[in-house]
Length: 154
Image (cartoon, rainbow, N blue to C red; front, side):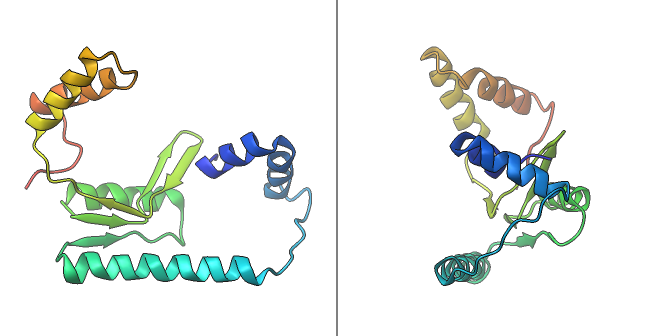
């Protein structure tokens, strides 16, 4: 499975990506060098995530679903989809797979905007010939017709 980080690593240095791939197949062992700066950045990042998670739940009063990330990716994807369909206001560590591609979002937070607003924005974008607007326009049109629901509306 490939992630956005894998692609960024490959674009930055194809050799690093080759080494990472070899490590994932247990062909080589990646050397480990303890770096207190990296440890500090990781700690500060995790503390920030936890603070924001508490803020969403306590200050903003949102129903936050926390996805378990220690198990199989497929289970985390099913849990993410279930949380979205059950109408969670926010999802922490939402997990997605598409073939050999996968990724996790730190936070997915429901945007409380109307479908009509999305539809009108997509129409304006489409008129301006923006590259991704046609797909957005089609998605909005199918949602307005009731052909599908990305996230239940409250």
